[in-house]
Image (cartoon, rainbow, N blue to C red; front, side, top):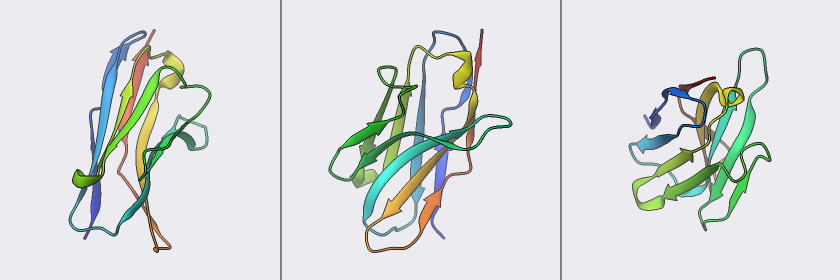
Length: 117
């Protein structure tokens, strides 16, 4: 069974940096896009960033200029480099993969990011 395994979350002070990773275990269908979402307590899950298989990126306005998404299609892995972190970035971060010619997506288990002021 294919799973998305996330790593890299933790506790960091405001202004600091963290890098999240998400890798697919097992054989998967050709990837259409990879992305990161986050959910803060009491709030809905929101898009952070996505990257297409061709390398086109998209960011939420709240993270533009601070976060960078990158992907390694050969390794079925997506990264999120987070810099200049703010307390409002505190959330559980989830990776998400979408596939070509497949009606489903895969979600990671989530990794906690906590930014202290």
